[in-house]
View 1 (cartoon, helix red, strand yellow):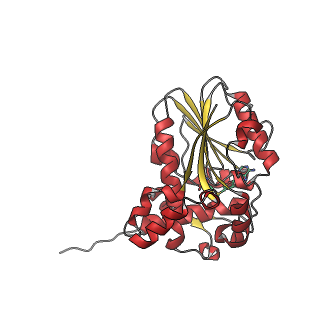
View 2 (cartoon, rainbow, N blue to C red; view 1 turned 90 degrees about the vertical axis):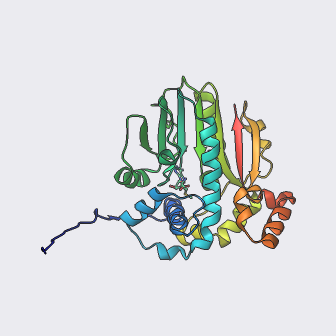
View 3 (cartoon, helix red, strand yellow; view 1 turned 180 degrees about the vertical axis):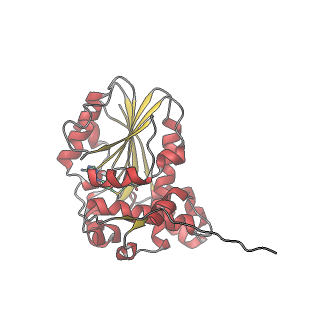
Length: 280
Ligand SMILES: C[S@@+](CC[C@H](N)C(=O)[O-])C[C@H]1O[C@@H](n2cnc3c(N)ncnc32)[C@H](O)[C@@H]1O
C-alpha cells in the first residue's frame, strides 16, 4: 500500500491568428488530423494530429467535419507516393506552400537529399515551433513569387518540386514566372502539384469551406495541362491524375464508387481538381 503522486504539463499551445491563403493550411492540417482520428485513416498523419493539438485556434470556424477529410488524405497519399518514387540522394526538394504538412516525416527522405520547406514568413514562424529543423531540412519564410526565392539555393543538383494546394492561390502570371525561374535555376527536375480548372477555381471560391471561411481567394485555373509546355520552355507533362482514379475510392459503397469512377470519363469533371506531374 502506498500513495502515488503524479504531475503533468502540456506543451504550451501556440496562439494562431492567420487569415486568407495562410489560414487555409490550418484547414488542411485539421482535416489530416481528423483523418488520423477516424477508425480507418486513409493517410494516418499523427504529426498533423499533434500539430493541431499544439495550436490555439478555433478550427470549428471552417465548418468542416471528417467527411471533408477524404480528398485531402487522397491528395496527400498520391503526392507522397510520387515523392518516394522520385527521391534520390543528391537531389534538392522544394516543398512550396508547405503549410504545416509533415511530408518530410511521412516520406523520410534518404540521406543526401536537401529539403526546403517554403511558405509565407508567418506560416514558417509557426512551422518552426512545431516541426524541428535538421541539417538536411531547412525552412524559407518567403512568398514563392519573390524573384530572389532561389538565390540562396544551390542550382547544381536535380530538383523535385512539390506544391500541394498552392498554385491556385497564385495569379497565372506569378505561377508561370515561378515555374520558369525553377526550370532556369536547376539542371533538371520533376514538378508535382495539384491544379484546378477554371471551373474548379470558380466553384471553390464559392463553395470550398476552407477557402470561403479562411477568407481566401483562388486565381489560377489550368484547363489543358499541355498548355504549360508552351508557356514554360523545357517542361514536359508526365501524368495527369484525377481523384476519380484514387484507389481509396474502393472503400466507398459500390453505387457511389461506380458513379465517381464514371464521372472521371468526363474531361470537365476530371480536370476540376487533379494532380499534375511534369519533368524538365
Ligand atoms: C491549402 S494550404 C496547403 C498547405 C500545405 N501544402 C498542405 O497541404 O497542408 C495553401 C498554402 O499555400 C501557401 N501560400 C499561398 N500563397 C503563397 C505564396 N505566394 N507564397 C508562399 N506560400 C503561399 C499558404 O500560406 C498556405 O500555407
